[in-house]
Image (cartoon, rainbow, N blue to C red):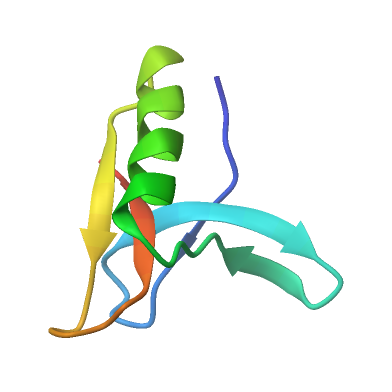
Length: 66
């Protein structure tokens, strides 16, 4: 299965993305429950992923594609 991904500004972390009117942007989540639910859905489809929280005390979470 193919999914849309993008790379974060660190140029090495690939995350789940979506098409918006501004282009391709990373999906962001504000809490662990939302992020874990989406990660579990992707794992059920056979996609190797995990929840990623970057930059120390950031409140934003991403779904990192391994």
